[in-house]
Image (cartoon, rainbow, N blue to C red; front, side):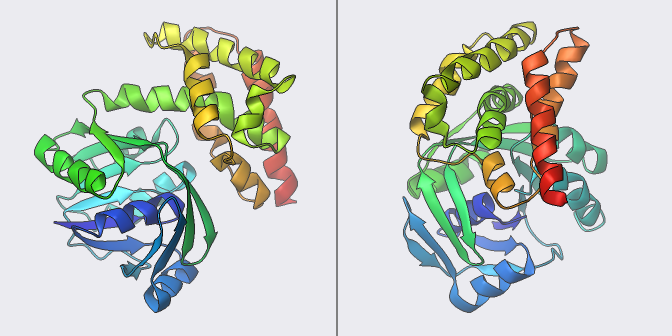
Length: 295
């Protein structure tokens, strides 16, 4: 099986390294990252240690069986525009943050689509180098026309490499559950410039709880009956020393995925005529921080 990781940053590079132990894998990424990998291999430190000699390219020319899409959510549209004339019958697996990636993919390609979530902690250190900061779990599931045997084979490969990975019968629900938790954690950490674990300490914890309470109301309307606060606390505990991806983006002066996390949460709440004043405030504060860096 030939696998391409399209948009190989931190997450894509880690998964590409793990999958390369069994499959023919190619990373598609930015020029400086690609050049560093081709010259010196992909260096991973932290929970995973090693140098992985993986093919890396700037563009996809076709021929893969599976494409893992690991771009930022705001790049999904551009990625699919780039891919639409090249892909033929590949399986596309969205392994991204954000709540609207599958909908965007379907606009351009609807033959074979799967999706996944992961809570692995990864930091992009520099071109050719990533840090695996925390172990988490990964779930993959079918969206449309993807053979479960293929996904199970990929999951077995990830498990062989040491990941906690499993199949999900309802991956779209899993994506929403993760998205709701991200909505509780990411904006607050990005605005305050704190590690995830700081959310559990007073007085920040009081705001954290109020954010989760608003999101819990939306969850109930969507028939997601999990305790959002408990789920979010568990993630904050397990990733206490991590900087959220949204905070990492702010620290680097980059665009965040706020529109594809909190933005989609607010849109869904509007459909149910729910007011989410605190989450709306967090949304605009993160947008302010983005604009501040742009200037």
